[in-house]
Length: 382
Ligand code: UD1
Image (cartoon, rainbow, N blue to C red):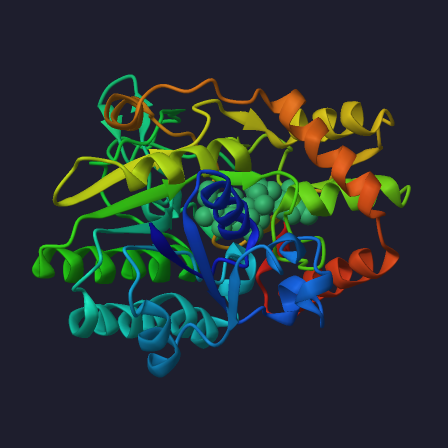
């Protein structure tokens, strides 16, 4: 199939494009190649340089209706990846996140209404951030959905989530696709708008659509240039520079870290899914790891256990726990042997070591923390 990957120059998109090519498809990438992610020369970017020469790559703004209309011509399937992805950054670059994530989806959806003819499936990359804190178990009230943590609690070092009914501490549970939407960051809100705009439009057009809600995706190809791009890159570069890893809160927030190869595998399977209407699946590893677990895996991967600092700092808009319930995914798209964290992190640290850590990246990260601090969005428990 001729397949358009909108935002296909990014971390997940470029891995997916290469897999599609290897599977005998004809991928076409449309991407703006943002300097924040790729630096000034995309053909040299460790994230996407393999695409050039291997497939058709179009450079254009994914919110440009004319660029989209031209790229959509004659394609049989579309992957939609464009997004601002930084939870912290979204809390002060609000207009930018609304524009990329929500308005961008609007431009794409409108292009589809004019040109859906040949298209057999749309696959949208969404996020577990639509669930906010997600589900939890209360001894008295069963499955509940904790609200946003209060600033006063966080500042007092109370990082846990509580039952919204009785206020008692709760145990985190895996998110299910039917859980309520409770996004807590501008990132989560705008990504929810994005998936809903596309799912609603494709449903109205009778066009099969698969929404994949990713957990924390990591692996080789993750931008080392972007200080807002996730903790794997940040932590690894700090260790390589001999600096301490700054673990926020009490080092015990949890995330479901899923390797990019596992995500690319389900991206490909989503293409041949039989589901007719909008189908929504979580994509994660199903395993919850703490920030400390991650720091240890990075130390093991680099064979150089780095010092860590449990700073008590926290980002406004962050959630405490995340993990995916994968039952719907594996029932619909088949089971899979997910990469365990230590092995997966080793593929990443080997790749970073080969690319070479950079002091400039650490300086950009320090600046990003300063930006957040100035905006009142990076705070400390006293
Ligand atoms: C990430 C993704 C988002 C995705 C979501 C799904 C990024 C930038 N964002 O958001 O696109 O949809 O997962 O779950 O990859 N932390 C530290 N020290 C630091 C920086 C962060 O301890 O120096 C903590 C944060 O407080 C947070 C955790 O690390 O608890 C993860 O942060 P981050 O990598 O930015 O990702 P998410 O916000 O989970």
